Image 1 (cartoon, rainbow, N blue to C red):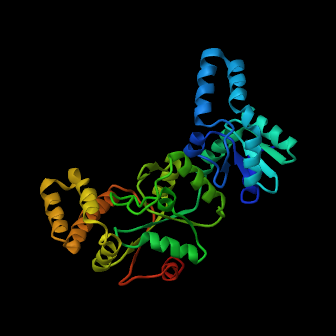
Image 2 (cartoon, rainbow, N blue to C red):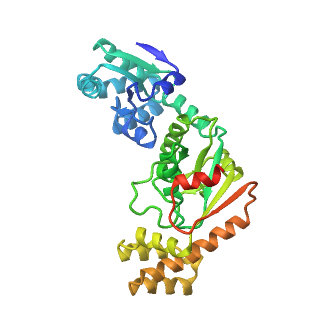
Length: 336
């Protein structure tokens, strides 16, 4: 049994197996990507121990903890052996304290090769917050709604370029309709953890393509430092004809349930105004998806142009295409 620093763990993620012995609630709030959660104290046990600690102090709380879980040690070891059959594991709790030491000692006695993360999950979070604010050579891909920015981003990755897919990490496309057909959004903490994982895998000497985003993506929010980097980065604006953009929007949203589209469209009431909203909802009621999509494009285009007018962009390149295009074509423009 030995102690490892956070830097050693980060370098070995993907090869080391990580066991998180915190409660289910702590794990759901945020965890090291790829870690397995097998709690020493479950949510209810942790609540009871916390109450005991406040009312009677540390010693009584520790004794209560042993009373609650002591009879479950054999089951705990069997569960861990099932998840880690090679009997080699790096584990952590919140601060690398009592919970870590108890489980580590149990596993050591059971013949495991055990490492404890110094400082626990708290040290990992400190690393994450530093990592997501790290200076990057960011290049922004912007453009009107329906221009295919996300698809282009993935095509650039296929061509060997580095990307950060913020919408993919947030499980949200950023707009009023951005959460449709997406997985539930991660907590803010887990969003940051996943973002740090991506940044850790980047070559900082090379450029990184990022889609133009608001600071808030659904319920997730970018750090101020990263947001400022994006606002100051070189801006590549892609442009497709309106008819192609309209077709893309219809293909993406046109087959969704009418009730869902009406609900999401209605959420724009304050921005659209009663009269305009009524007209757009009427298009949906009549099944005129083309008119609905065209009206929404006008709204989003207006917002985009207003936002651009308020933004000071130091370096901007505009790339116009007459039809759908590929990442390879895009790179010919930016790498003349």
